[in-house]
Image 1: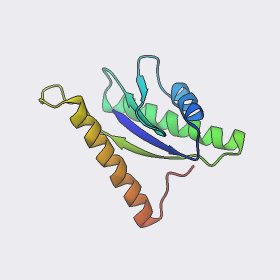
Image 2: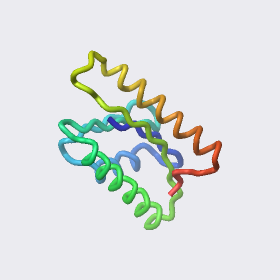
Image 3: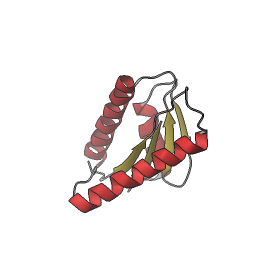
Length: 114
């Protein structure tokens, strides 16, 4: 599961980029103003990393073509079927990872600004 928060982007543009980036079988849901969750059913780590690379490339392309300065924060959490954990727990883990990534960027001056 991938949790994404966009900055500098209206939700409709964010949704457009997400739909362009991920497969029809992936589930994209808006969970807040600028916050989205992507679920990758029956997908291993390698395939989800390819999807994430495609997403980053689409952000770059959109920024270049439209003269935008979109940025985002990402939190990733993995569902492990052999563990007794709820969807809420997975969302909490992804949210925590997103905040950790965001704070690391601030601390070290590295942004996911593309």
